[in-house]
View (cartoon, rainbow, N blue to C red):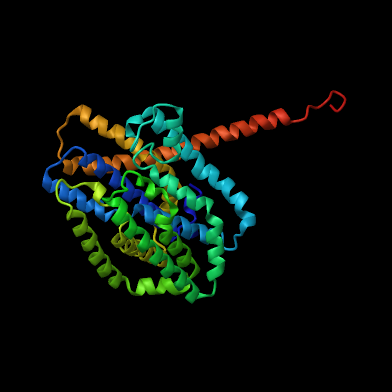
Length: 380
């Protein structure tokens, strides 16, 4: 908790990651609820909420790049080994453990194909199909591996705002063409089955990484602009939310969550608008030295590890509710599942961190005792 007491440590990236992990937990709960075939009215209700929080992966990528650029202001390729070593323990190791847990103990949660041999196990392990949410790991870890490119970008645009605008607009155009191709060929097109892994390619989220890097580099100009035009952002967000929601519901009944992908051109602007609003709110918190800043930083520290475990806890909470057969209203089940999943996910993330810290300290203590030179009788 020591880090959480550092007010300066809470930045826009932290708030984006916190909002993203809460949003993705809500998405997962809605996916479980929708699989129970609720009435049509409730399908539209939960579908609307689902579309509202369909910003989680872009916001997380934005937050990672913003915070990493902030904490590595002069980073170069020389710092890459230490950076990867640190991220290996924070990101890669928990990913490996939780992927094993899902494949071995909850294989029924696999996506697309199930493994039947060790080759299939390895393929499911690395491609993000081990659980409904693990596709994100495959994509996000690509950004961690490619981080030197974004450090280079930060140096390239430093003191060159027009260069930054050109890069952002060029990336936006590239992303628009990329998503338009998805809409035509993959979404409901002929290549749907062959290219389902479209979402695992870092290119699909590149615009949000670029935006996170550029916002930090030009924060002195962009932060006052965002705070000054907050009302315009709200209006723009409402318009974009209306557009993406109408598009989502236009596919008819039953309401299918698969008709709300990240990879439609309209979703680029909706996600950027949502990210912008979250950043503006955080800027307001920072300006007023809000009392919640330490908690935001703490939540962000454990957000990824909580994200990894949340479907595990949600699955067992859902099974428990079905076993008890309480016949509760979805108005009670839905918020209860969200609350329980958030609490259990963060408790497990923090608890496993403490446990590993204790084990690591004991191992280091034991190694120190073994390596300690013995004092001979003559030296006594």
